[in-house]
Image (cartoon, rainbow, N blue to C red; front, top):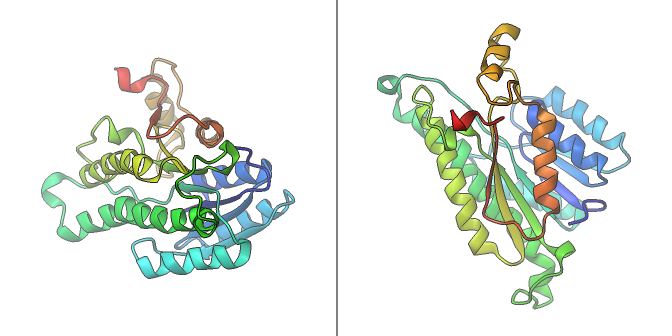
Length: 257
């Protein structure tokens, strides 16, 4: 898919990894919509940086646990742009808790944010991606490569290498990988759906530089990753017309040890 002149939605795009993805898509010529939950000032700054790249930008406060909020988001995208070509399901939470301290509320918060939310965002996004083809009666046709929609779900290494201290998170991200594969079949051939499982690519706010270096040294490539590593993977999956239902692990080989 040629990214230039397309419309992209990046959930959780106000800061950190989501911002890097949103800015990269804007640099490639896409108009970009970002969502945020609490980072209003960061979202405003990111929208300004997107617009500075010469494309349209928009942000909305969305709690993706709320399906009505998701419907409002996609209605706003449709009203503003009339289309959607790319979705990056990035918004998530990551909560650490020992197994015997996890409450039903903890469990629901992780699963609703990291799995239920991405499904209903993808469902609503797919409806908008398919709208023109449905109106033209072309849903049974094999679309041209540049007419395919693309969904990229951001999982993480916990999906393939369980982290017992983050049990609910691990289950939610494993489910996101299964969802990716199911959506890839359900939405083919018009929309491709893939996932990325980053390892250590962005230092947690409460970690020291020494802790961060140590975690990177454990990988065969002897370094932590960067948001740019994830950005390259996202752009690759969006552009690759013959890849769907796949999980791309970005961990410097850490999974192998």
